[in-house]
Image 1 (spheres, rainbow, N blue to C red):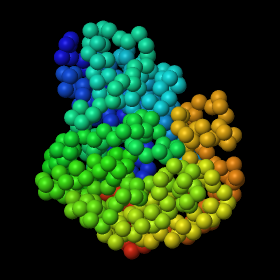
Image 2 (image 1 turned 60 degrees about the horizontal axis):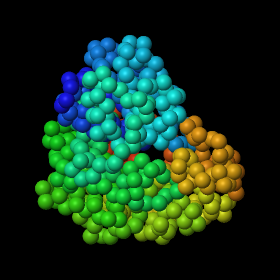
Image 3 (image 1 turned 60 degrees about the vertical axis):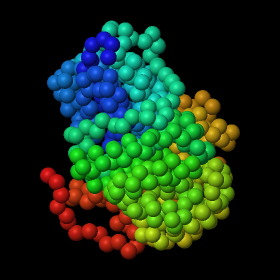
Image 4 (image 1 turned 30 degrees about the vertical axis):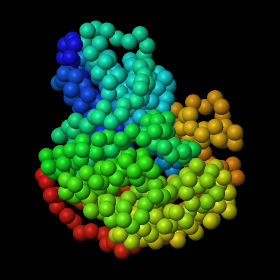
Amino acid sequence: MEGRQMKILLISSNTATSPYPIYPLGLSIIAAALTAAGHDVLQVDFLQKNTSLDAITAEIVNFNPELIGISVRNIDNVNLMNEQYYIETVRNIVTAIRNVSKSKIILGGAGFSLLPELILKETGADFGIIGEGESLVVNFANNAAKGIYPGKCLIGPETRLFGTDLPSAQYDEQLLQYYLHSGNIASVQTKRGCACNCVYCSYPILEGSRIRKRDSRFVVDDIELLRDKHQTKYIFFTDSVFNDAEGAYLEVIDEMIRRRVNIPWTGFFKPKGLNDELVEKMKQTGLMAVEIGSDAASNITLQKLGKGFSFQNIVECNDLFVRHEINTSHFFMFGGPGETEETVFEGIENIKSLKKCVIFIFMGIRILPNTALARIAIKDNVLSAGNNMLKPVYYISPAIQKGWLEKTLTDAFANIRHCIFPPDTLDSSLRALHKLGYSGTLWELLLPDKQHPARKRHAAK
């Protein structure tokens, strides 16, 4: 490394726990890049610190960093029924840092990259990195070690990383143990980028529309490290879509089979392109549960969301996983483009027809900048052209009334145990079970043939 070593504190500002806490993978990837460059890095998690600003400042005083990075994973919780806005949390962390340290503060992360100028201004941080930060943050730290800082507050984005340049995370033992005691779930990334064209989604904006896969050997190295060194009992693949159309996911599956790696795992799936042979192959590696991005419940609304599949594809996918005894969940959003009272009633009946699965139901769709939905919302007069979208704003079709939609969904699913509306209704119950020592997603306990478990002791103390 040119220049001297810097002491760098990295803070995960995320406080979201729905439906279960997720390890701050992006933070640990940045930590790995900085450590490889020779810097002394400490990772701190605001959630793990019980969202205590005093605990954060105590870490700063004790470590005395020369540079502080804050990861902003989400702007808000994208749930109209229980809105939570996270940028105020970041601002409070920045303010707390200023009270005890003169270190430069740099922001990054997926949420930050959506609205970097606004978030930087809102929080009062010094600098921000847009897009993938592995090389940008190392360059920043190396220059900062010499007393050199950029003339501009915002840095990037730069050319995206591919293949072996996509690093493994530096899993922090203390943070990992916190998340393992919150469900024994650890995060692994197999690729970046998304080739889907969903009108509301920011993944192609943040990661590009081209699939960039990690070397499957390194992915499985990560899994073995988590399993053998950290006693992880459940893996969550964080990819926007695990079963990508190009088949990159199969390289990971084949490598797991070759190395005889079997560990319970889950991920996000799209309801197309699978068959019995592929599901059975994934099951050999430990596939336990799938979270399907079905998103809309009628063919009209599916088409308007740019999903590229029909409700019949959703039914077939559901039946496929159920047939192989894989716990199956779906996520549906009502109120999107093309939604009418007729499609709402059709969607409700379609959802009720799905067998042996758990269904999470959202009302409205969070509008994010630079997406097709943002343009649709302006055209439909749902969003004013001057709205910067920093504070949550939701699309609900002009053809239906918000109050009517909420009552209709509430009445339709009130007495159906496996259909969850609002989608975070049972979060506290699931977290309580995790604290009792149960591993995994736990929403599968809502499946029609599942019984509520008896009290269980922690496997590890």
